[in-house]
Length: 326
Ligand SMILES: Nc1ncnc2c1ncn2[C@@H]1O[C@H](COP(=O)(O)OP(=O)(O)OP(=O)(O)O)[C@@H](O)[C@H]1O
Ligand SMILES: [Mg+2]
Image (cartoon, rainbow, N blue to C red; front, side, top):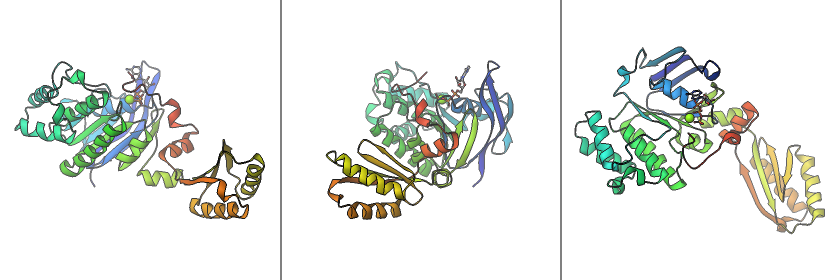
């Protein structure tokens, strides 16, 4: 796979003190979906703004198709950008917004392209609705739809799932997959939501404090940095403290990494399936099977990767007010 976009030692400081991006080196390959995952304030938007040419880096280089970027005009037409803040005309309808953006980009056969994109983002039935009257998730979809009318080579989506409910997110997953398949467009997306990065990205860079902590496919990162699995066991609420104590003692004997909360036991292990089989034997030998309500294996997640690399949770900064945070 060829590299479409490369950054070398990129830096950006705001007001001489906020070090938003501190030496980022990345390579984005042609046709991949690349996720930037990091907590609020990690520097994702700052990085994207430099990549799309809105913000000038203090230091470092950006190369598109191997050519060093000097200004912004050379990018017009090649890139699409759906910013974190929604950008469209609120008083125009969905269709009028599409037509206006199509004319700005002098798109040939605009109506055909508009219909395709409306369909892709399931906006066809909303085409006559005034943009400001749509729901948060629908507005977000329009924002993304407008950014790719001109068939860019690379699309930047800053927090594409912001304000979306699970149903709208499903539309997003499907549209991104179709975009990749049908148009071969390279997509760089930022998110502070582990689930979004995991589901959508071929590769992910986890960033914090303006630095890349690690890069790889979600599976690579999980097996490298989150190989520990968790077995979660739930007992019935009416289990007596005595029996609970007995189970705890037996399990503690075998598993050092045992913790309890309410009626649940959590066991961290490298081999979850073997642990489940052993735990079932223990439960049977104690004749407490009838109290067992649930036993589950939780594999490592990108959240665990972040936790293992930084000692803090992605989620702790993960404020969500149902939409934009600025
Ligand atoms: N225009 C600005 N002036 C001063 N500081 C800024 C400006 N824009 C961003 N920052 C600061 O730079 C840091 C990185 O911000 P950035 O918006 O890049 O983070 P982010 O990873 O996109 O976060 P989020 O998940 O909240 O969107 C933050 O500390 C932020 O407060
Ligand atoms: Mg941001």
